[in-house]
Length: 190
Image (cartoon, rainbow, N blue to C red; front, side, top):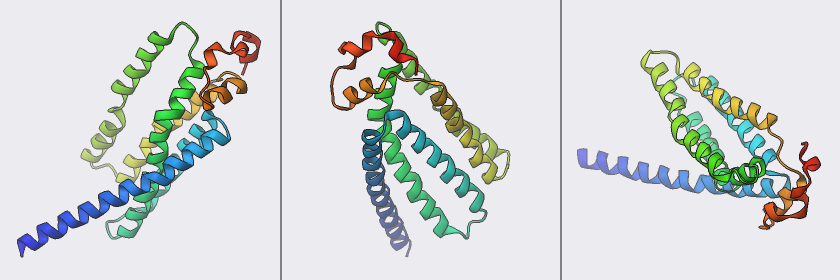
């Protein structure tokens, strides 16, 4: 009887892992499509905004353990958004980073970018765990995770990437730093 229980548990876990992996695919393709149709900044804004919306809705609506179907529904939405995020991280973040990176300062800003990713990445899980250990409602603990994407939206709003010509060349695989339009400082006013 215990062997059957362990076996059924591992079957369920394997099934859920498959659902998680397959659910990242639509987000990845949609994120790539939106980035090509608009610009990296718009795609990043949309992904972050939808993540905040799904996160807030999920943590406000899941108030008791009996709502298992909601858990799975929001879980799939989160995983689709994570697929979009990882597409962003591999393609869009690099494009945005190269658009805001002044020529000649690549190494310094790349080091700062990596440092921020490594040192600040532990902060949201730490805050969630601390609030959970202090027996603060999981709804509030989950909603506080929106502080980080909201701050990202504010920073992206303040950022003015270079002109649309550079964006199009980057999406087409061209070298935007060597284009003739990148030498005109009046085009970068945002």
